[in-house]
Length: 135
Image (spheres, rainbow, N blue to C red):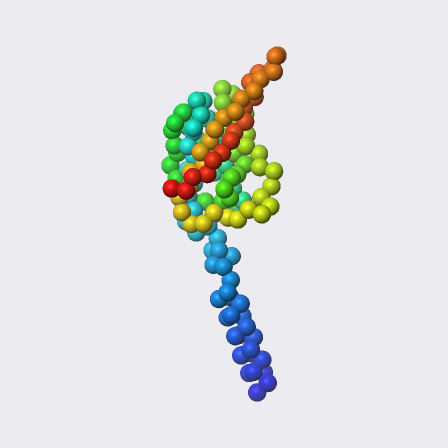
């Protein structure tokens, strides 16, 4: 009898615990789709985005062009992004994701901007900036 009582208690406790949990713990980012929009004056070549579980290639985008949406397992409001401009690397390097939550289900656009700087005798160096838009 005590075993049945303990089993009932444990089962009830687990049910309440599971019912109170956020569904995203078990099914994070269901149907999150990300596309890239080139909001710069440069052609972005070999665009690669590193998401927490995968790396996705978005190819080449001319100025003002957007890619197709790509389904990803998990995504934050920003990511590590690498591209090339005129043969030079352009990178968006996040420091960390501390305090960030995964994006909820939906379609999003990573709108990319390019910032350039050059020294007197150095070639142009490019950096990427990003703005997230929910579509």
